[in-house]
Image (tube, rainbow, N blue to C red; front, top):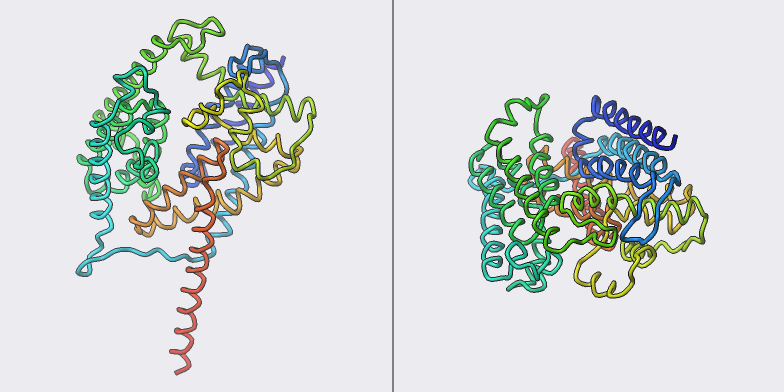
Length: 426
C-alpha cells in the first residue's frame, strides 16, 4: 500500500513539473539542477521506504513518510521562487557590458577565459596523478595530490563556469563550443569525475541558450545527430569509468553486492535519498531532540554524516579529503527545527538567496552582460550546491555580493533619476 502511495506522490511531482513548465519553462530551467535532484531523490526514497539495508547508515529502512515530505518541500520551493521572480521583475538592475571601439566584446573575453582556463587545467592534469589511470587516487584526492593544488580554489572541482561560458558562445561559435565541451568532459573523466559533471555540465551549457531564446526551442534542430552521438559517447564513457572503478573496489561488499552493475543500481536508488530518509525517521517520525542551532547549516552535510554514518572511524579524515554523502539539503533542516519552522526557514532562505541569485543571473544573460554573468553563474552554482548538499558556508561571499549589487543598482538608478529630474527642471 505504501508503494502505491509513494508512486502516486511521484505522479503528483511530475504533474506539478508539467503544469509549472507550461507557463514558466525558463524559470524552471534556471533551477534545473533542483529538478534533477527531485527526479533522482524521489525514486530513491520510494525504493528506500520499501525496506532495504542502507550501507552508509548501517541499518534497515522502512516507511516513514519521507517521500511525502520531500514532494511538499519541492512544490513549496518552486512556488516561492515564482512569487519572488514576479516581485523582482518589477525592479531594474545594473547589467554592465564590455566594449571596444563601440563594439561589444563580452563574447570574445569569455572565449579567451574558457581557452585559457582549459589550458591551465589540462597542464596541471598532465603533471599530476590521474584517478582514471591510478586506482590509488580517487576524485576526492586528485586536487590534494595534483601538481598545483591551489588551482582548486580558483576553478573548483569541476570548473562549472566553463560549460556555461560555452553555452553563451554557442550561437556565434558553434563548432568551437562543441569541441571545447568534449575537451571539458574529457578533462573531468581524467580527474575521476563521473556523472556529476555530465549532468551539471550539460545543464550549464544549455542554460544561457534557453534564457536567450525568443521562442520555443526547436529541440529537433538543436539536438542534431552530432550532439546526440556526443552525449551517448560521454555517458557511455562515464558508465565505463564507474564500472571499472566498482569492479576494482567493490564498495558495497557490506551488503553483499559484488557485481558492478548491481552496485551502480544500489548507488543510484539506495543512497541518493538516504539522508532525507534518515532525517525524517529521526526527527519527524520519531521526534528526536532538535538542535535549534542555525549554524548547523554552515557544514550541514558534515553534521548529518556524524549523525548517521555507520562507521565513524576515519570519518574526519575522509571529510577533510572532500568525501561526503549526497543531498544533505533539505535533510539538515529537519535536524535543526520542527517541520513547520524548518520549512519557514527554507522559505526565507529561498526568497533572500536562492531566488534572488537566479533572478540576477537571468537578468545578466538576457541583457548580454556575459562576462559578469559568468562570475554570477559561479556564485549561482555555489548557491545550488548549498541548497542540495547542505554546505551553506559557501554562501558567505554570495550574500555579500547580492547585498553589494543591490546597493549599487539602487544608487545607480537613484542618481540617474535625480539627474533626469534636474534636466527637466532646468
